[in-house]
Length: 215
Length: 212
Ligand SMILES: [Zn+2]
Ligand SMILES: [Zn+2]
Image (spheres, each protein chain N blue to C red):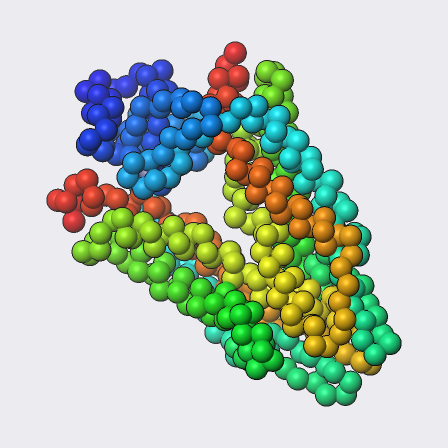
């Protein structure tokens, strides 16, 4: 039981894997290494999910592919009386800014451009740095991971804006707003990047922390 | 390979984010145990939490029923007016062929998944709150509930509403319907519900009650 005493001493952290155990990431129960299914919650157990990196890259790739048409095609089709205008994500944000709603324009720009692009880079960087450990310190990589996990869902804002506007602004000949194809590909892009972030096994971030020779 | 007896392993807890191993220590009610390496909250029990979570989940279901079908917002401009419910918003994409998929996704993210999560949590915690054995499939139900958590987007929808209102304001006059306030309340209740749930306590109770 020497490993358990190791675990009790707080000054030196030991990972479940080094203690010869496999941890359940869902319910935090630990089992002897080699156990397949968690007896407490029924989840599949893997000490480190190295194959998860392939899933991360796959989801990330389709996420980026969907993001391209999302920016080229119109997000909104606005018709006021007899003039119809189409606007892409960026045009929509610019339009708001020109109408004086700079704060709201900024929210849309951050949620629809900066967060998605930042997420692509962050997830790619995390997946790359775990497979080929670089010098970035685990705490900072972890901060990046937490940020990606927390912020990713918020990109959905613009899709919901389009949904609300399209449902609400249906005023016969006076005005009408309808969704454009970009709403679809943008939503897909957000969903795929969320799946990429969820596929990432965050425990790999810390493996170099406790054993520098693992590099 | 070291051999551990499964009973002893019950005393241990591994951080799900960074794999750091600790002796599980039940904190005082209201206190929290966090991972000293990555600061992930490991254990955070609260007094009477099961009953409170159930009450909050029931509130979510009732509010969502009202918020979905009552008028949410209405606008009028130049003699024309229109009212939309949350349900209408979810169905805004239905006239565009393959865009229908987006309608289903929107309905799921803002209405179905929050309600489903509330129902699953009630199913899991209902018997536990009264000291009974968990109902069959409780473990799978709680797994689903946890998997669905990032996909429940009611709070993001509310921010979307705020943005949409600014966009519409120079086009038409907007009035708030009763569902608007129900939905806002709903978001607060969902946050309170998630904050009152200690996952570790629930999993441990499910495990202990199963064998007894
Ligand atoms: Zn488990
Ligand atoms: Zn941790």
